[in-house]
Length: 126
Image (cartoon, rainbow, N blue to C red):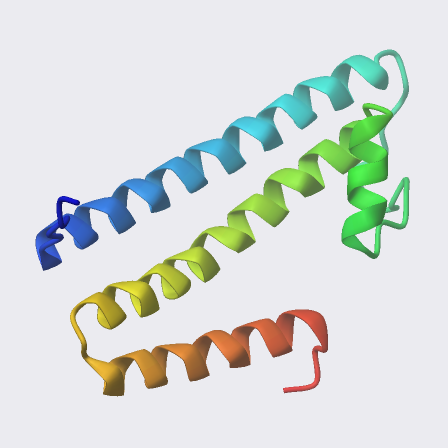
């Protein structure tokens, strides 16, 4: 079995590519949702003086259910969720990179940071 050697530069390039793909995917999904919103609401008058939400999407399952029925606001929010997940994945892959380098101090620090981010994301109390 051939051992795969990953250098620090390889991991940096991979993480950079992952960030670019995440941002471009998020932008593409949000733009698609914006186009859908314009098409779905064609001919309606818009009041730009006040903000009113068309739909209260408070959970990820609400967003996914809205995307399944091609709700434009849900598609836009999915783009935002993808954008939020991109740096979280970057932190997770950094932990893997430190683990491959056997730099256990930074693995621990990165996992603590990831734990705080996820706790804040799901609980909102930290």
